[in-house]
Amino acid sequence: MSKKSKQEYIAAIRARYLSSNKAEKQKLLYEICTTCGYNRKYIIRVLNKKEIKGTPKKKAGRKKKFAHNEIIAALKNIWKSTNLICSKRLKYAIPLWLPFYEGELTEENRKLLLRISPATIDRLLKPIRNKFKKKDYQQPNRVL
Image (cartoon, rainbow, N blue to C red; front, side, top):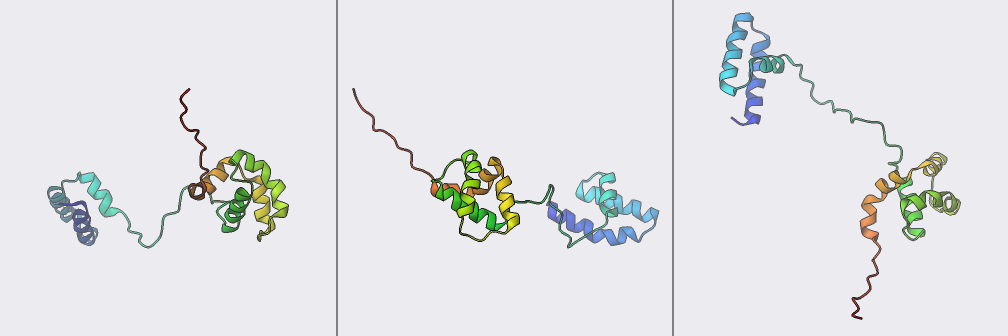
């Protein structure tokens, strides 16, 4: 049996299991164990578990502060204006370039841009960097 068919089978039996008495539960458990090949205690846990559908799971970790489109757009424009410098230098260039930035930024996003770390800059610019890679200057092989 495939995993999906086992899950469907257990879901179909769940209603019968919850409404039956102890002797009938023992027979159902034996039947499921032989059919699916699962451990008896595992099946008991699965059958007694409450089903909660439609509620999405929360993502682990804290909320992303710098995921606003305004911040990413401002960061991208300043990065391109500074000739694609590395994030460590860009961190110190942002306060110099931010007063001359022409795009729309709220005061809160301005403060966030001033506090941003180089690692966060790298993470935000990662999808954009590949489009604007600098071409390395390679000297031709010279024979002396």
